[in-house]
Length: 428
Image (cartoon, rainbow, N blue to C red):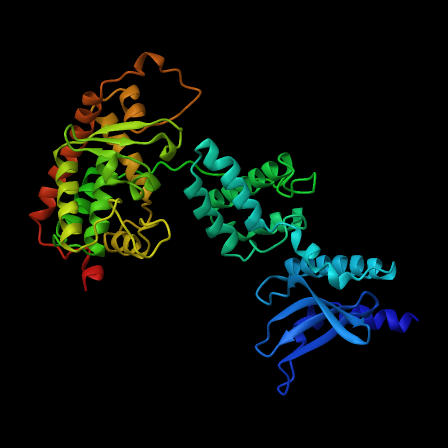
C-alpha cells in the first residue's frame, strides 16, 4: 500500500509532469497523475499541457477541462499552485460523482470562478470608470505587470499571498513599479471582496512589504535642455516617428503635463480662439480639470502638427494618433526615446524628469511655489495654499516662458557648434 502511495506521489510532481510528452503517432495523450480522483494531464502534439478530469461514464471515456493549464514558462511555485487547484477541483468532482451526480452534465460550474483579468475588468468598470480614476493608465499597468507574466488567466479565488510576493520579487529591479503593482493588486481584491464579486475574505496582497523608494531629483541643466531642444529641432517637418517624438518632448518640456495626459491629448480640448488647452478632470491625477494657456512655442508646434497629420492623411481626434493601439492614440514613445537619450548621453533621464525640470526652471526664475504648484497641477494635502487657488493663468504662462527662454538660448548656442545630430540613429 505504501508503495502505491509513493508511486502516485512521484507522478504528481512538477518534475514528472514537465517530463511528459505526447507520442509522435498520437494527436493527444492522457497521463494519469492522481488516479484516485481521476486527475489527468492532457498533452497535445505541440507540447501544450492542461489538467483534466477523466473517467468512464456508461462505458465511455468522458472528460472535463478543469481550466488549469500547466504553463512550462512559469516558475515551480506558480505551477504547484495550479496543480493544487486542479487537484481540488478533481476531488470535488469525484466526491459529487460518488454521491451519484452526473458531473458531466454540469461542466459549466467549473468555469464560473473569475480570473484575475475578470477581477480587473470588474474593478475598472465598477470603480475606476465610475470614479474617473485613470482607468486607461491602470489598464496599461495591469497589462504590463500581470498580463505580461501570464497571471491574468489565474483564478482570483486561488491567487495566494505567495503568488503576490513572487510578483513583487520579480519586479525588484524597479522598486517603484513593484510597489505600484502590489497596490493595484491590493485595490483590485479589496474592491472584489467588498462588492462580493469574489467569494473570499482575505486579500493576497495584504502583508506584502513594499520596497523603500528613493525620491528622484533629476532635472535638466540649461546646457542639457539646450542640447535636447537643438537635437529635436533638426528633425524634418514631415509626419514620421522622429517628428512625433520631437513634438512630444517639446510639449512635455514646455507645458509640464504628465506623460499619459499628453499622449491622450485631443484636438477638441484645445480652444484655438484663446489658445487654451482644457484638460478634462477624468484625465487628471487629482480629478480636477486643468486649463493651460498656450504660448507661441506651443501654438507653433500644434499648428504644424495638425497640418502634417492632414497632409499624411493621419488626422484623427487625437493629437498623437496611433493605428497600432486599441485606444487610438500613442501609448508610449518606446525605443525612439531610449535611442535619443542614449545618443545625447542622457542615460539617466526619464520622461517624468522633463516635468520636474520645468518646475525647477520656473522656480529659478523667481516664480512662487503657488504658481509652480498650480501650473503643474500638483496635489499635496500637507500644503495649505488656499490663498493662491485663483492664481492668474497669465502669470503661469509668463513663468513658463521665462523658464523656456533659458532653454532656447542654450539651444541657439548649441546650434552654433558643429555637432552630429543625436537623432542620426533614428533617421538612418
